[in-house]
Amino acid sequence: MESMGIATTLEEVQELIDKVDENRSGELEYPEFVRVKNQLVSDIRRGDGDKLAIFLQYSKHVMTIRRELIDLNAHPTLNSQVFGIKENAWEWKVLIQGPSDSPYAGGVFNFNVRFGHEYPFEPPIFSCSTRIYHPNFVPLLNGSMSLYGLLRRWDPEWRMRRLLEEVEKILATPDEELINEFEAETAEMLVGGGVDTRSAITSIIASAKSKAARHPRVIALECIAIYRNDLNTFNREARKLTLQCATSSM
Image 1 (spheres, rainbow, N blue to C red):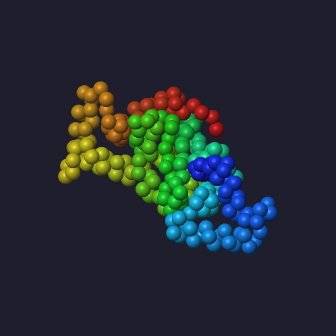
Image 2 (cartoon, rainbow, N blue to C red):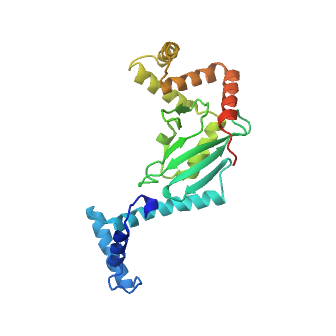
Image 3 (tube, helix red, strand yellow):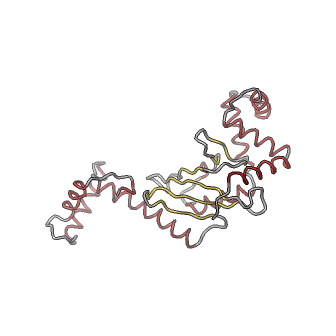
């Protein structure tokens, strides 16, 4: 239960056992199973379930996540490896190898996955803990990197396999649609609505050069500008950071 985030004392565990095993036979007999099942369903519908009800409710989601983990270990995507976290059923660690024909070749990028209790009807939280120089990634204040906008495309039919395949695809070829969305959103956020996106971005980057500390989105805008205007410099910077930071092995 603790691996699902349900803190339980020994006394509470014993109470739950007593609730299920009413005659204390040490076995879950069929009449007891039916009684407990019906009671738990009723409690959940009323929003009045105890920790056992919460556990059973979460179990369905955890089993879905577990099946995906087993499937991805047996049949991995092209460049990814996934690892479950023993202490937390809601978290994975993912290693994605840089595409061979990109400046990220030979690098291994660490991603952290946190599933919510509504998965797969809501996307997981997905972040990169390895620094990467890429026009679709935005640095965060905690040092991690966010792949901007991809989770907005999430569909329950995707599951983790499709998400990992999309990330691998973006590492090989930056997603122009997501880049454009990021630029438009950032221009509106930092300058205001009703402005020309291109002019706003040029102004944002120019004014940031005189500042000691830059907004994380400005750093991402600078990366995008170099990617679009000077691909050789972009590839050199991306390669340099890959060699410095993405040194884990798969």
